[in-house]
Length: 480
Image: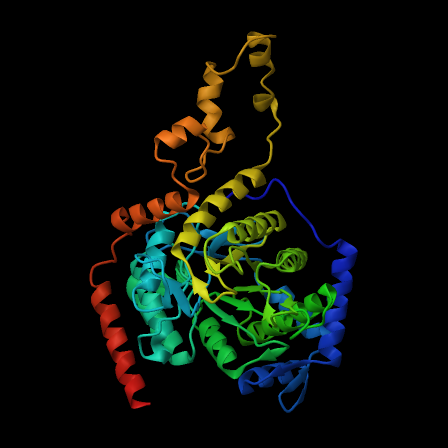
C-alpha cells in the first residue's frame, strides 16, 4: 500500500483556487455546457438549470449540492483480495492508460496495431510490478468486432491480474457485458457491490461537451453501483484558452457539471473527476503529452480536487518519444514526481509513447522503477526519538563507523531505497557482467515477467461464464 505523501507540492494558493472555482461557477451560469443526453438535460432542468436545446446553463446551487452529495472517496478491490485502493484525497495510485492504437510487440519490439492478447499481457505485467496499482488496457484491439473491443479488453485484463481494473465502453450494451463479467468473477451482484473490482472510465469531449454516448454509459454505471472516473478538460491553445488559468476553468466547468449530472441521477454515487489538461504544440498541432505544462496543469488540477474534497485522476508515464529513450525517461520521471508530490489520486497513462498512440510494456517496467523512487522521496524523512539515534551516535562516537551496527542492518531496507533496474555497481563489476545497458535490463525484467509470472487464477466456472458473455455479445452485434 502506498503511504500518504510526507512531502507535497502546490501550484495554487487557496486564494487562487477560490478564484478559479468562482470563475467556473460563473462560466457555467453564463456560457454553460452542451449536454447531448436527454435524460441528463431533464435531470438538470428539474434541478433548476436553464436548458436551451442542448445548451445548459447551470446555477451555482446545483454544483454546491452535487459537491455536498458526492462521497469523499471510495474503495476499489482486486479480485484476489488483499488491501483495497482507497480512492480519496491523500492517496496516490499509478496505472496504465487505455486505447492506444499501436503496441510495441513484446517479442519483436516492433510497432504494430494492437490486437487480442495485448490487454492480457499488459495486465499480467502490471500484476507483477509492485508499483503499478491498477490496470487499464494500454491497447485498442484492432482484430475483434470493433464495438466489442472494450469488452474483450476487460475480459483479458480481469483474467490476468488480481488488481483493480478500469474499463471503458462505447455503449450501454457493452457496459452491461463488462458488468456481467465482473459479476461472474466476483461471485454475484452483492459481492461486486460490496467489493467493486472495477471503476468505469469515460471522458467528455472538449470543449465543454457531455456526449450522449458517454453520459448514457455513466448513468447506467452509477445506477448499477459501479464507481466511475469521468475525465474532462481541454488543451491549451486548441480546445481551451491558451492560458493555464483558462484551461483550469474549462476543466472545472465540465467536471463539476458532469458531477452534478451523476449526483442528480443517484445521490452519493462514487465519482473520481480528472483530466489531461495539457497544451498544444503550435508546431505540430498535437497535444504535448510530455510538455512541462502537462505536469504543471495536472498538479494544479490535483490541488483543485483536494480543495473540493474529491478524488482526482491525473497523468504520468506518457511521453512524446517514439521509443523508450532518454526523452521518455526524462518525461516519465518529471510526470511521476510531480503527480506524486501534487497528490493526484489515480494517475493513469503509464506506458504511453508518441502522444498516447503507442502502448509499451517496456515503458511500464521502467516507470515502475521511477514510481518506486518517487514513493521513497514522498515518504520524506521521519524525525522522532527512534530515528534521531542519539544513543547510537554516542556509542559509536567520533571516528567510528555505523556499517556493522545492529540498527543499520535492521533498518537499511526501509531507509535506503534499492533499485531493481538502475545500476550502482562500479565500472569493473559492471563490465565483467557484460556491460548491460539500461535497455537490456528493462528487456530482461520484462522477459522474466512474461516467462514466469502467473496471475491469480479465476474462480471456478468464471472463464466459462466469460466465454458465454462474449459469445452472446458477438451474436447481438452481428444482428445490429
